[in-house]
Image (tube, rainbow, N blue to C red; front, top):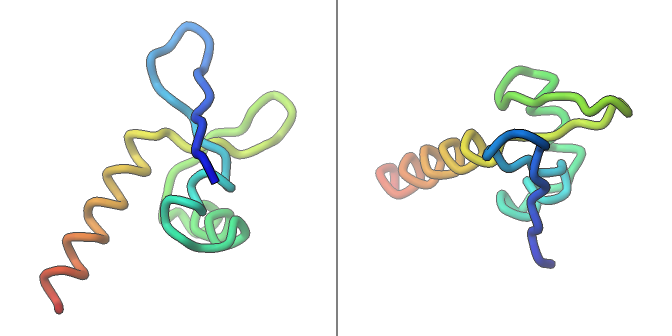
Length: 73
């Protein structure tokens, strides 16, 4: 599956769907939604009510989790 981030108008920040984030973390999209509900990862809502995630925040979290795993192994 190819991750194709969406661009928010008038901004350089890339936005990812829950499915795209799930692909990066290798989890189910519902898990990503639960993380957002719990405050583990920030999200924004589109005018239609869909969640989107800032690519920079997602990559930062992914890097932190990857570093945590490599240091504990």
